[in-house]
Length: 418
Image 1 (cartoon, one colour):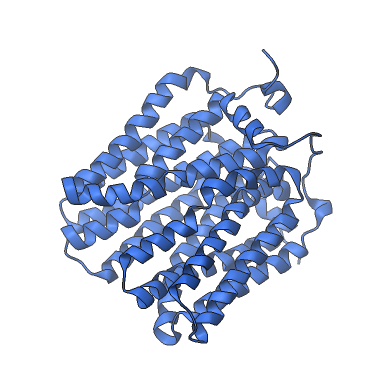
Image 2 (cartoon, helix red, strand yellow):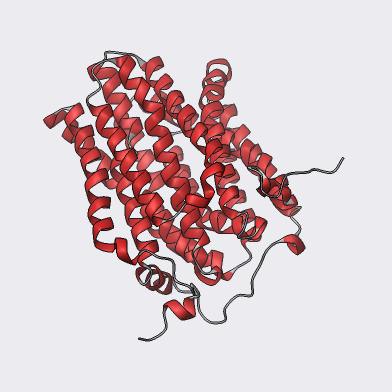
Protein backbone atom coordinates (compact mmCIF):
# COMPACT_ATOMS: atom_id res chain seq x y z
CA UNK A 1 0.00 0.00 0.00
CA UNK A 2 1.36 3.42 -0.93
CA UNK A 3 2.13 5.79 1.92
CA UNK A 4 -0.25 8.77 1.82
CA UNK A 5 -0.14 12.07 3.72
CA UNK A 6 -2.23 15.17 3.06
CA UNK A 7 -0.27 17.90 1.31
CA UNK A 8 -1.54 20.45 3.85
CA UNK A 9 -1.58 18.12 6.88
CA UNK A 10 0.42 18.26 10.09
CA UNK A 11 2.62 15.35 8.91
CA UNK A 12 3.14 16.51 5.35
CA UNK A 13 6.97 16.39 5.48
CA UNK A 14 6.61 12.59 5.62
CA UNK A 15 5.34 12.67 2.03
CA UNK A 16 8.99 12.78 1.01
CA UNK A 17 10.52 9.33 0.86
CA UNK A 18 14.00 10.41 1.99
CA UNK A 19 12.67 12.16 5.10
CA UNK A 20 10.26 9.31 5.77
CA UNK A 21 12.94 6.60 5.91
CA UNK A 22 15.37 8.74 7.91
CA UNK A 23 12.80 9.81 10.49
CA UNK A 24 12.49 6.47 12.37
CA UNK A 25 16.27 5.95 12.20
CA UNK A 26 16.74 9.34 13.82
CA UNK A 27 14.18 8.38 16.46
CA UNK A 28 16.24 5.32 17.37
CA UNK A 29 19.41 7.42 17.37
CA UNK A 30 17.82 10.06 19.63
CA UNK A 31 16.81 7.38 22.12
CA UNK A 32 20.31 5.89 21.92
CA UNK A 33 21.86 9.30 22.51
CA UNK A 34 19.87 9.80 25.71
CA UNK A 35 20.66 6.25 26.81
CA UNK A 36 24.37 7.02 26.46
CA UNK A 37 24.10 10.43 28.13
CA UNK A 38 22.63 8.96 31.31
CA UNK A 39 25.03 5.98 31.23
CA UNK A 40 28.04 8.26 30.78
CA UNK A 41 27.08 10.39 33.79
CA UNK A 42 26.57 7.25 35.88
CA UNK A 43 29.87 5.76 34.71
CA UNK A 44 31.75 8.93 35.70
CA UNK A 45 30.21 8.82 39.17
CA UNK A 46 31.09 5.13 39.48
CA UNK A 47 34.71 5.80 38.52
CA UNK A 48 35.30 8.99 40.51
CA UNK A 49 32.42 9.61 42.94
CA UNK A 50 33.03 13.24 42.00
CA UNK A 51 30.66 15.91 40.75
CA UNK A 52 33.68 17.92 39.64
CA UNK A 53 34.69 15.26 37.11
CA UNK A 54 31.10 15.10 35.92
CA UNK A 55 31.18 18.84 35.23
CA UNK A 56 34.57 18.60 33.48
CA UNK A 57 33.43 15.83 31.15
CA UNK A 58 30.19 17.65 30.35
CA UNK A 59 32.25 20.73 29.47
CA UNK A 60 34.62 18.65 27.32
CA UNK A 61 31.70 17.25 25.36
CA UNK A 62 30.05 20.61 24.69
CA UNK A 63 33.11 22.88 24.39
CA UNK A 64 33.84 21.87 20.73
CA UNK A 65 30.77 23.83 19.62
CA UNK A 66 32.80 27.01 20.23
CA UNK A 67 35.30 26.24 17.49
CA UNK A 68 33.72 23.52 15.32
CA UNK A 69 30.11 24.55 14.66
CA UNK A 70 31.09 27.50 12.47
CA UNK A 71 33.46 25.50 10.20
CA UNK A 72 30.80 22.77 10.25
CA UNK A 73 28.37 25.22 8.71
CA UNK A 74 30.89 25.99 5.98
CA UNK A 75 31.19 22.25 5.30
CA UNK A 76 27.44 22.13 4.79
CA UNK A 77 27.65 24.80 2.10
CA UNK A 78 30.65 23.32 0.31
CA UNK A 79 30.28 19.52 0.39
CA UNK A 80 27.64 16.85 -0.11
CA UNK A 81 25.64 16.99 3.15
CA UNK A 82 24.60 13.34 3.03
CA UNK A 83 28.22 12.17 2.85
CA UNK A 84 29.31 14.57 5.60
CA UNK A 85 26.55 13.22 7.85
CA UNK A 86 27.62 9.65 7.14
CA UNK A 87 31.14 10.60 8.23
CA UNK A 88 30.02 12.34 11.44
CA UNK A 89 27.74 9.44 12.39
CA UNK A 90 30.59 7.00 11.76
CA UNK A 91 32.90 9.00 14.02
CA UNK A 92 30.27 9.23 16.77
CA UNK A 93 29.48 5.54 16.50
CA UNK A 94 33.16 4.60 16.82
CA UNK A 95 33.53 6.63 20.04
CA UNK A 96 30.48 4.89 21.54
CA UNK A 97 31.74 1.47 20.45
CA UNK A 98 35.19 2.03 21.95
CA UNK A 99 33.77 3.25 25.26
CA UNK A 100 31.32 0.35 25.42
CA UNK A 101 34.07 -2.22 24.80
CA UNK A 102 36.30 -0.60 27.43
CA UNK A 103 33.49 -0.84 29.98
CA UNK A 104 32.38 -4.40 29.30
CA UNK A 105 36.02 -5.61 29.37
CA UNK A 106 36.64 -3.74 32.65
CA UNK A 107 39.49 -1.66 31.20
CA UNK A 108 37.82 1.76 31.30
CA UNK A 109 39.53 4.63 33.09
CA UNK A 110 38.36 8.19 33.61
CA UNK A 111 40.79 9.57 31.03
CA UNK A 112 39.22 7.27 28.43
CA UNK A 113 35.83 8.83 29.15
CA UNK A 114 37.28 12.35 28.92
CA UNK A 115 38.98 11.78 25.57
CA UNK A 116 36.01 9.99 24.03
CA UNK A 117 33.54 12.62 25.33
CA UNK A 118 35.62 15.31 23.64
CA UNK A 119 35.79 13.28 20.41
CA UNK A 120 32.01 12.80 20.48
CA UNK A 121 31.61 16.54 21.03
CA UNK A 122 33.75 17.26 17.96
CA UNK A 123 31.69 15.05 15.66
CA UNK A 124 28.41 16.27 17.16
CA UNK A 125 29.33 19.94 16.76
CA UNK A 126 30.19 19.29 13.11
CA UNK A 127 27.04 17.23 12.57
CA UNK A 128 24.39 19.63 13.87
CA UNK A 129 24.62 22.55 11.40
CA UNK A 130 24.96 20.10 8.50
CA UNK A 131 21.99 18.04 9.71
CA UNK A 132 19.79 21.10 10.21
CA UNK A 133 20.56 22.56 6.79
CA UNK A 134 20.03 19.10 5.20
CA UNK A 135 16.36 19.18 6.23
CA UNK A 136 15.44 21.61 3.45
CA UNK A 137 17.19 19.40 0.90
CA UNK A 138 15.11 16.40 1.94
CA UNK A 139 11.69 18.03 1.95
CA UNK A 140 12.01 21.35 0.08
CA UNK A 141 11.47 24.83 1.46
CA UNK A 142 7.68 24.60 1.48
CA UNK A 143 7.66 21.64 3.87
CA UNK A 144 10.80 22.56 5.82
CA UNK A 145 9.00 24.25 8.78
CA UNK A 146 6.85 21.15 9.16
CA UNK A 147 9.94 18.93 9.09
CA UNK A 148 11.56 21.06 11.83
CA UNK A 149 8.47 20.56 14.02
CA UNK A 150 8.45 16.81 13.42
CA UNK A 151 12.18 16.57 14.19
CA UNK A 152 11.61 18.41 17.47
CA UNK A 153 8.87 15.95 18.38
CA UNK A 154 11.28 13.14 17.48
CA UNK A 155 14.00 14.54 19.76
CA UNK A 156 11.65 14.99 22.71
CA UNK A 157 10.24 11.49 22.28
CA UNK A 158 13.81 10.26 22.69
CA UNK A 159 14.15 12.48 25.74
CA UNK A 160 11.10 10.77 27.26
CA UNK A 161 12.11 7.17 26.47
CA UNK A 162 15.92 7.26 26.60
CA UNK A 163 16.60 8.14 30.26
CA UNK A 164 14.08 5.60 31.56
CA UNK A 165 15.43 2.88 29.27
CA UNK A 166 18.98 3.73 30.31
CA UNK A 167 18.11 3.45 33.99
CA UNK A 168 16.58 0.01 33.49
CA UNK A 169 19.57 -1.19 31.46
CA UNK A 170 22.14 0.13 33.95
CA UNK A 171 20.32 -1.57 36.84
CA UNK A 172 20.22 -4.88 34.96
CA UNK A 173 23.48 -4.98 32.99
CA UNK A 174 25.68 -2.04 34.01
CA UNK A 175 26.66 0.88 31.79
CA UNK A 176 28.58 -0.98 29.06
CA UNK A 177 25.64 -2.21 26.92
CA UNK A 178 24.19 1.32 26.83
CA UNK A 179 27.18 2.56 24.85
CA UNK A 180 27.08 -0.45 22.51
CA UNK A 181 23.38 0.12 21.81
CA UNK A 182 24.07 3.75 20.97
CA UNK A 183 26.85 2.67 18.60
CA UNK A 184 24.34 0.38 16.86
CA UNK A 185 21.86 3.28 16.54
CA UNK A 186 24.50 5.29 14.65
CA UNK A 187 25.01 2.33 12.32
CA UNK A 188 21.30 2.32 11.55
CA UNK A 189 21.42 6.02 10.58
CA UNK A 190 24.46 5.39 8.35
CA UNK A 191 22.66 2.54 6.54
CA UNK A 192 19.60 4.71 5.95
CA UNK A 193 21.77 7.62 4.75
CA UNK A 194 23.35 5.24 2.23
CA UNK A 195 19.86 4.53 0.84
CA UNK A 196 18.78 8.13 0.43
CA UNK A 197 17.99 8.91 -3.20
CA UNK A 198 20.01 11.93 -4.22
CA UNK A 199 17.82 12.32 -7.29
CA UNK A 200 14.91 13.19 -4.96
CA UNK A 201 16.79 15.82 -2.96
CA UNK A 202 15.81 19.47 -3.35
CA UNK A 203 19.19 20.90 -4.24
CA UNK A 204 20.03 24.24 -5.75
CA UNK A 205 23.25 24.95 -7.66
CA UNK A 206 26.11 26.01 -5.41
CA UNK A 207 27.38 29.54 -5.80
CA UNK A 208 30.95 29.48 -7.17
CA UNK A 209 33.75 30.86 -5.01
CA UNK A 210 34.95 30.33 -1.44
CA UNK A 211 32.47 29.52 1.34
CA UNK A 212 33.93 31.41 4.28
CA UNK A 213 32.59 31.69 7.80
CA UNK A 214 33.21 35.44 7.66
CA UNK A 215 30.79 35.72 4.74
CA UNK A 216 28.17 33.93 6.84
CA UNK A 217 28.66 36.42 9.69
CA UNK A 218 28.39 39.35 7.28
CA UNK A 219 25.16 37.91 5.91
CA UNK A 220 23.58 37.56 9.38
CA UNK A 221 24.72 41.01 10.51
CA UNK A 222 23.25 42.55 7.36
CA UNK A 223 19.89 40.90 8.09
CA UNK A 224 18.25 42.47 11.20
CA UNK A 225 15.50 39.82 11.10
CA UNK A 226 18.05 37.00 11.48
CA UNK A 227 20.22 38.94 13.94
CA UNK A 228 17.26 39.52 16.27
CA UNK A 229 16.25 35.85 16.20
CA UNK A 230 19.77 34.69 17.03
CA UNK A 231 20.19 37.28 19.77
CA UNK A 232 16.93 36.19 21.38
CA UNK A 233 17.99 32.54 21.14
CA UNK A 234 21.32 33.33 22.81
CA UNK A 235 19.72 34.85 25.92
CA UNK A 236 16.94 32.25 26.11
CA UNK A 237 19.34 29.31 25.97
CA UNK A 238 22.06 30.88 28.12
CA UNK A 239 19.84 32.04 30.99
CA UNK A 240 16.44 30.41 30.55
CA UNK A 241 17.21 26.84 29.47
CA UNK A 242 18.84 25.78 32.72
CA UNK A 243 16.15 23.37 33.90
CA UNK A 244 18.66 20.74 34.95
CA UNK A 245 20.34 23.20 37.33
CA UNK A 246 17.07 24.77 38.50
CA UNK A 247 15.42 21.42 39.18
CA UNK A 248 18.43 19.88 40.90
CA UNK A 249 18.70 22.80 43.32
CA UNK A 250 14.98 23.26 43.91
CA UNK A 251 14.30 19.56 44.45
CA UNK A 252 17.18 19.01 46.90
CA UNK A 253 17.68 22.37 48.62
CA UNK A 254 14.17 23.83 48.70
CA UNK A 255 11.74 20.90 48.59
CA UNK A 256 14.05 18.28 50.20
CA UNK A 257 13.38 15.63 47.55
CA UNK A 258 15.61 12.82 46.26
CA UNK A 259 17.08 11.75 42.94
CA UNK A 260 13.86 10.00 41.85
CA UNK A 261 11.96 13.26 42.07
CA UNK A 262 14.71 15.04 40.17
CA UNK A 263 14.34 12.51 37.34
CA UNK A 264 10.56 12.93 37.41
CA UNK A 265 10.97 16.68 36.90
CA UNK A 266 12.90 16.06 33.69
CA UNK A 267 10.13 13.80 32.41
CA UNK A 268 7.47 16.39 33.23
CA UNK A 269 9.37 19.06 31.26
CA UNK A 270 9.73 16.63 28.35
CA UNK A 271 5.96 16.06 28.33
CA UNK A 272 5.43 19.80 27.90
CA UNK A 273 8.10 20.00 25.21
CA UNK A 274 6.70 17.04 23.29
CA UNK A 275 3.20 18.49 23.45
CA UNK A 276 4.50 21.78 22.04
CA UNK A 277 6.34 19.95 19.26
CA UNK A 278 3.20 18.03 18.26
CA UNK A 279 1.09 21.20 18.31
CA UNK A 280 3.71 23.29 16.52
CA UNK A 281 2.72 22.33 12.94
CA UNK A 282 -0.66 24.00 13.51
CA UNK A 283 0.95 27.41 13.99
CA UNK A 284 3.58 27.29 11.24
CA UNK A 285 2.08 30.20 9.33
CA UNK A 286 2.55 32.52 12.31
CA UNK A 287 6.29 31.95 12.68
CA UNK A 288 8.36 35.06 12.21
CA UNK A 289 10.94 37.17 14.01
CA UNK A 290 8.09 38.84 15.91
CA UNK A 291 6.66 35.45 16.91
CA UNK A 292 10.09 34.32 18.19
CA UNK A 293 10.40 37.41 20.39
CA UNK A 294 6.93 37.16 21.95
CA UNK A 295 7.32 33.41 22.45
CA UNK A 296 10.62 34.05 24.25
CA UNK A 297 8.95 36.73 26.36
CA UNK A 298 6.26 34.27 27.40
CA UNK A 299 8.91 31.69 28.27
CA UNK A 300 10.84 34.22 30.36
CA UNK A 301 7.69 35.09 32.31
CA UNK A 302 7.08 31.38 33.00
CA UNK A 303 10.61 31.08 34.45
CA UNK A 304 9.91 34.11 36.66
CA UNK A 305 6.69 32.47 37.89
CA UNK A 306 8.60 29.25 38.59
CA UNK A 307 11.00 31.13 40.86
CA UNK A 308 8.20 32.10 43.25
CA UNK A 309 6.16 28.88 43.28
CA UNK A 310 5.71 28.19 47.01
CA UNK A 311 5.12 24.44 46.97
CA UNK A 312 6.53 21.43 45.15
CA UNK A 313 3.15 20.75 43.55
CA UNK A 314 2.85 24.29 42.17
CA UNK A 315 6.45 24.18 40.96
CA UNK A 316 6.02 20.99 38.93
CA UNK A 317 2.69 22.32 37.61
CA UNK A 318 4.61 25.13 35.92
CA UNK A 319 7.37 22.91 34.47
CA UNK A 320 5.50 21.58 31.40
CA UNK A 321 4.23 25.10 30.66
CA UNK A 322 7.79 26.42 30.71
CA UNK A 323 8.99 23.42 28.67
CA UNK A 324 6.32 24.07 26.05
CA UNK A 325 7.24 27.77 25.90
CA UNK A 326 10.91 26.97 25.47
CA UNK A 327 10.39 24.50 22.65
CA UNK A 328 7.87 26.70 20.85
CA UNK A 329 10.52 29.44 20.82
CA UNK A 330 13.25 27.11 19.58
CA UNK A 331 11.16 25.56 16.80
CA UNK A 332 10.03 28.98 15.61
CA UNK A 333 13.59 30.33 15.69
CA UNK A 334 15.06 27.36 13.83
CA UNK A 335 12.47 27.32 11.06
CA UNK A 336 12.47 31.14 10.73
CA UNK A 337 16.24 31.23 10.27
CA UNK A 338 16.29 28.36 7.78
CA UNK A 339 13.32 29.51 5.73
CA UNK A 340 14.62 33.04 5.37
CA UNK A 341 18.26 32.24 4.53
CA UNK A 342 19.73 31.91 1.05
CA UNK A 343 20.49 28.31 0.14
CA UNK A 344 24.07 29.25 -0.73
CA UNK A 345 24.80 30.38 2.82
CA UNK A 346 22.26 28.39 4.85
CA UNK A 347 24.80 25.92 6.21
CA UNK A 348 26.98 28.71 7.59
CA UNK A 349 23.95 30.51 9.00
CA UNK A 350 22.92 27.34 10.84
CA UNK A 351 26.49 26.95 12.08
CA UNK A 352 26.24 30.44 13.60
CA UNK A 353 22.79 29.53 14.98
CA UNK A 354 24.24 26.42 16.63
CA UNK A 355 27.09 28.52 18.06
CA UNK A 356 24.76 31.03 19.73
CA UNK A 357 22.41 28.22 20.83
CA UNK A 358 25.08 26.48 22.91
CA UNK A 359 27.88 29.02 23.16
CA UNK A 360 26.94 30.85 26.36
CA UNK A 361 25.72 28.06 28.62
CA UNK A 362 29.08 26.36 29.42
CA UNK A 363 30.47 29.71 30.59
CA UNK A 364 27.43 30.88 32.55
CA UNK A 365 26.34 27.63 34.24
CA UNK A 366 29.22 27.40 36.76
CA UNK A 367 28.60 31.05 37.68
CA UNK A 368 24.90 30.36 38.23
CA UNK A 369 25.76 27.49 40.57
CA UNK A 370 27.99 29.80 42.60
CA UNK A 371 25.39 32.55 42.53
CA UNK A 372 22.72 30.21 43.91
CA UNK A 373 24.89 29.60 46.97
CA UNK A 374 25.50 33.33 47.41
CA UNK A 375 22.12 35.00 46.90
CA UNK A 376 19.78 31.98 46.99
CA UNK A 377 18.25 29.54 44.52
CA UNK A 378 14.95 31.32 43.92
CA UNK A 379 16.76 34.62 43.48
CA UNK A 380 19.11 33.06 40.91
CA UNK A 381 16.21 31.65 38.91
CA UNK A 382 14.48 35.05 39.04
CA UNK A 383 17.67 36.73 37.82
CA UNK A 384 17.85 34.30 34.90
CA UNK A 385 14.22 35.11 34.07
CA UNK A 386 15.08 38.81 34.25
CA UNK A 387 17.84 38.47 31.64
CA UNK A 388 15.64 36.20 29.49
CA UNK A 389 12.96 38.91 29.43
CA UNK A 390 14.98 42.15 29.47
CA UNK A 391 17.72 41.48 26.92
CA UNK A 392 15.43 40.28 24.09
CA UNK A 393 13.04 43.14 24.85
CA UNK A 394 15.81 45.75 24.49
CA UNK A 395 16.93 44.11 21.24
CA UNK A 396 13.35 44.05 19.95
CA UNK A 397 12.79 47.73 20.79
CA UNK A 398 15.92 48.66 18.85
CA UNK A 399 15.26 46.56 15.74
CA UNK A 400 11.50 45.90 15.61
CA UNK A 401 10.96 48.34 12.71
CA UNK A 402 13.65 46.57 10.62
CA UNK A 403 12.74 42.89 10.98
CA UNK A 404 10.79 42.49 7.76
CA UNK A 405 12.24 39.77 5.53
CA UNK A 406 13.91 41.33 2.45
CA UNK A 407 12.24 40.72 -0.88
CA UNK A 408 15.56 39.30 -2.13
CA UNK A 409 17.40 37.16 0.45
CA UNK A 410 20.15 36.04 -1.91
CA UNK A 411 23.66 36.50 -0.58
CA UNK A 412 24.49 38.69 -3.60
CA UNK A 413 21.62 41.09 -2.86
CA UNK A 414 22.15 41.20 0.90
CA UNK A 415 25.91 41.80 0.69
CA UNK A 416 25.98 44.02 -2.38
CA UNK A 417 28.10 47.16 -1.96
CA UNK A 418 26.19 50.20 -0.71
